[in-house]
Image (cartoon, rainbow, N blue to C red):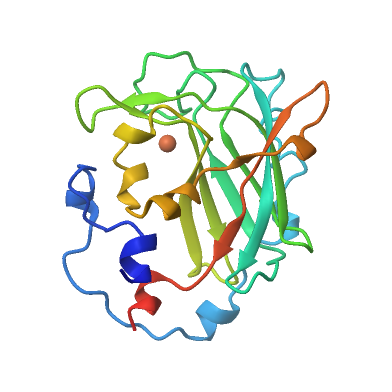
Length: 226
Ligand SMILES: [Fe+2]
């Protein structure tokens, strides 16, 4: 099994119905990067606010739910830290509802929770978010389909063309077995990499539990296939 089909989910995955409409039907075209892609500006420190990484302090009051710390490091394939990397997260609230017009799940919206955050990694590649643990939510992929609790991640590398979008899951979720998105990563050992680790050392006593999630940016599936 190559890296392409053991690590990355197939673009067309029948168990996840929407991929039938979204996956490309033609082979990708090779468009050599120009200086614009390689040297164009990416988001800088001046564009981020001090509360962008604290999803519990973006409104007048605190959101409901279990407050947690989510932290980790962004590394390259050789284990070197990637500093200045834009890490963005988005998630449902503690009741399992997104602050989004298209979310019709009859769970309460939380006026104190937008569910989006971002930060730049520090010199050691580290990032740290304060948020609340997201709830599971139903979706219409199949009968009685529920997404395991998860936080969406986007990591932008040295240029906007270098972007990883993935999801972080929580240990021991009983919904893993019936979730086609989680299981679209077919190698069980690789799937485990999407599950964060409870991190007692990073827990803040009397205040919040903590989870660790390291992200390794490697070559793209397309590059692996060359
Ligand atoms: Fe989601």
